[in-house]
Length: 154
Image 1 (cartoon, rainbow, N blue to C red):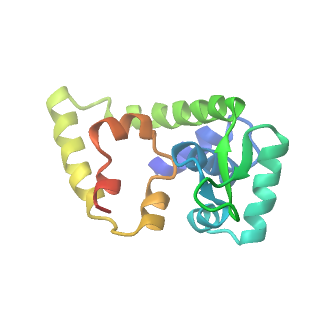
Image 2 (spheres, one colour):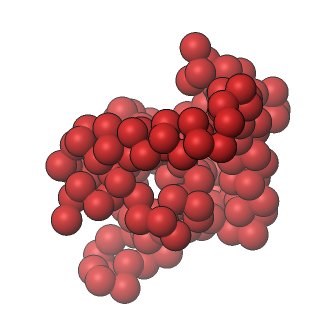
């Protein structure tokens, strides 16, 4: 139910598809990853992901460049316009998640978040699964506290 409301809110932003919007957030949160990593996170074929990236690049949201680690690889990052779009996506997501917590008092919110962090930290020990779990996360908030999903990878 919560994820459906998040998806509806994001679709109301008028983007191409949920996959396009998720791709932008993933690229924003994890710049300089390859198209191969993105295709695994999205569950798309490599060619489908390339087409998706072509669209985002043509719309001015994403750019490709050579990897600093491996000159044979192409990596992705969002442009300034892409960052603005990502913020709209995350704002839309936050409206739904805040609604979920609005009936809790502050103690209940903190208790719920503490339990959620424990549960999230136990979901995976693999990088691609972690990226899938966090594909619409506002990692700017999460990273300050230490993302429980990413912490589970260490």
